[in-house]
Length: 108
Image (cartoon, rainbow, N blue to C red; front, top):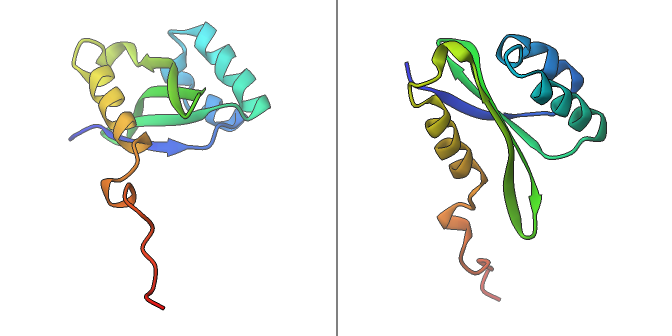
């Protein structure tokens, strides 16, 4: 099965949902809890075989987004999960090529 990346809300519940991924990185767990309280940034999850295996948080930086934290479950490290997580997260953050042109308007 491929890694499936999607955006999720930053909430305190999401920290609890990802306790298994975060147990190897207590500092990231604290940073996510703090971000949840402040509603800061956007959070992306990586799911493999119906289980969360990675998280990435991005924060606003100028006109775009900057990676703030990323964590991959220890059992899946060294298998390209982090690289794929970043690739898919970047795709989700990038504007669609169909939306990059001028606004279409009805003829008058």
